Amino acid sequence: MTDKRPTLSLKPKARPARAAAHDGRARPSSPAKSPQAADGAAASKPTYRPSPEREAAAARRERPERPEHAAPRGKAGLRPSHEAKVAPQHDYRPDLKADSLALALLGAANAVARVRGGTALPQALSSVFSAYDVTPQTRGAIQDIAYRSMRQLGRSETLLGLMTSKAPEPPMLGGLLSAALALLDPPQGTPAPYEAFTVVDQAVNAAASHPDFAHAKAMVNAVLRRFLRERDALVAEAIKQPLARWNYPQWWIDSTRAAYPSDWEAILAAGNTHPPLTLRVNRRRSSVDTYLKSLLDAGIEAEQVGPGAVRLAQAVNVSQIPGFHDGVVSVQD
Image (cartoon, rainbow, N blue to C red; front, side):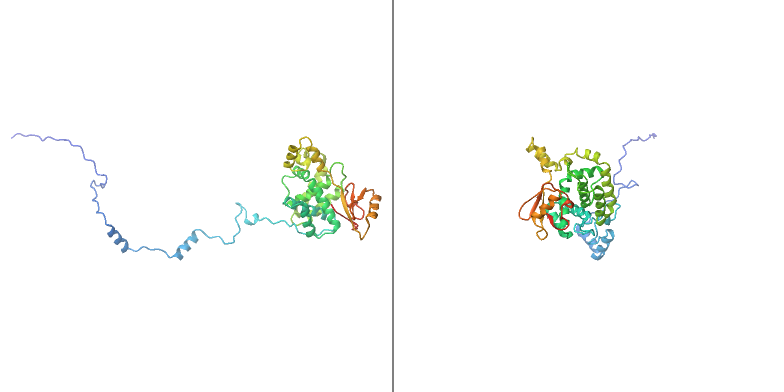
């Protein structure tokens, strides 16, 4: 018997199945369950669902509700109360003497603030007169300063811009400073209606009397005194701006220049001239002829207009008008 060795054949090793277990054997696939069987299993094991009340309580714990009338949130780091803005007290009647310059300045400032808010000056003055319940003499002083302030508003606001870092707030404070500057800086060739120290003192008193800006009385004093110290330099710098030179809005200056390229400067200059002052004579205290003689004795040129009024050739401060503070005459326009 021949001893023959067996022949070995090398065959490639089969790849293991992907789903095979770690032991090399594939897991037997479980038979698919029918839909009826799945429904039966779900029905045999009931699921828990919390009551609506519990769900609502959980939602409130996750996100607390704000009160219905809660105050609006302010900026980061500030309490909501810091965001509240108090409405200006335009109808507040300060405790000032009826014939004081301080009351006249405050009334004019009130009117200027109303105009800046969109009210025409006559209606603004009417509201001020009603709120302050002033005498005819005080009405004339308020009206005179208010019109002066509006005629020089562009120049006054430019000067304020040179002396302050931001616009004074509230608007009535800005109106007070504009009114005081209009008295301290009259148009060229026009005498100042009041002494400078009187204007500064009364403007500070006016600021101190109003609760909206009593805290700013020191600022009012500082700004007005700085203007008196640096008047020439400040005015020279201010009039470089068309707004301060002509006291008209820029759009009006541009429109006038476009419409009248040769005469626009003369037109704007004529609009800035001070109109004549008309006074109504109180017939219970004087006649027109008698009052004209009083004006002539005071060196004031005037003429009769209408049955009960006189017109001054050159407007003067009401304190210089004979009989004004005694109720003999009142300012008409």
